[in-house]
Structure formats: structure tokens, C-alpha cells
Image (cartoon, rainbow, N blue to C red; front, side, top):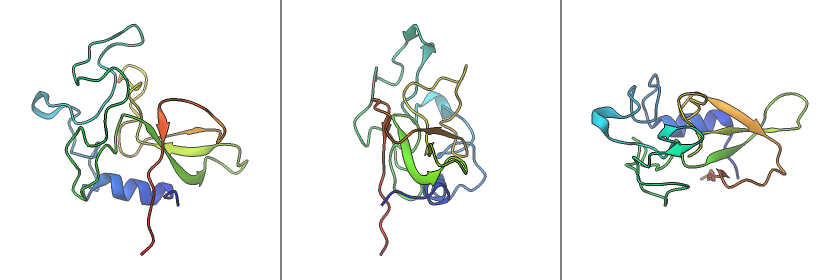
Length: 132
């Protein structure tokens, strides 16, 4: 099943309850990239500082405190929650490789966005939750 927004956020935080990002409060601590997002001038030039023009392979970045990889950037992740009471769009979390801090800081753990369930796009995916 898809995780709820609250389940997704708790898992993405990896135990860092007040941090901006899944790894702490700095986007690139010590100059190290921790997620696949746009670097350079959006939308005309991606500097590829993290090595990826589009999506990156799963596990390209260090896991968070719970051992989860790629919880920020790369692709948006569906959640099971509806965006609002109209139930036309579902909430997405995590941001994507098309996010840039000049217009979209949604790779922050607490940020969210939405899309309709029938949207075909290359920067949207999912992560499953498992009930034991």
C-alpha cells in the first residue's frame, strides 16, 4: 500500500524530527550532495554537480537514520492521502530532480505538493509501506 503523508514524513525524517532535510539542516553539508535535484540555472542549464541529468539509480545517496534511500529529490512520491476534501488530487512528497531552490524547495522533508492520480510524468514514483 501507499503510505499516508504522516507515515511518509516520519519515515523520511529518519529520526531527525526537527531537521529541514532528511539528513539535517544544510542542503549540501560540506559540499556533499545528499539528493538528486537541479543544480545550475533552472530550467536552462543543469550543472550536473550531483552527476545526474534525470533520475538517479536507487541508492545513489546515503540512507537516512532508518536506512531508507532517496527520500528527497529524484522523483516525487505518491501518498495515499487526498490533497484536500474535493478528492481530485493526491498528496506527493519528497520533491524531484526538477526541483531547484529558486522556485521549488519541496525536497525539504515537511514540504508537499499534489497531482491528479492519472498524471503521466517521469518525475513521479512511489514507495510502498508494509504492515507487519
